[in-house]
Image 1 (spheres, rainbow, N blue to C red):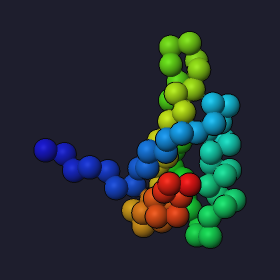
Image 2 (cartoon, helix red, strand yellow):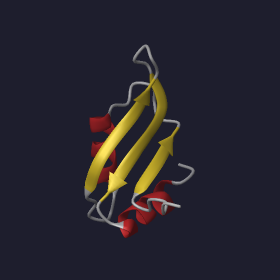
Image 3 (cartoon, helix red, strand yellow):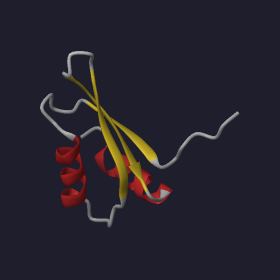
Length: 74
């Protein structure tokens, strides 16, 4: 069995117009920690409309943990 990734975060309830760039910029600007984002993907349906969910990857596990602890339920 493969180990679960601890450097990726699922972000839900995004604004419908949020883009990958918007999400990256928000995380980098509002974070009090130096984050290294490796990838960011906003999921879309077949018609190209946002599903209001994104996955963001970070270089280190502690960065992902920080984002979860800081932004959970916000």
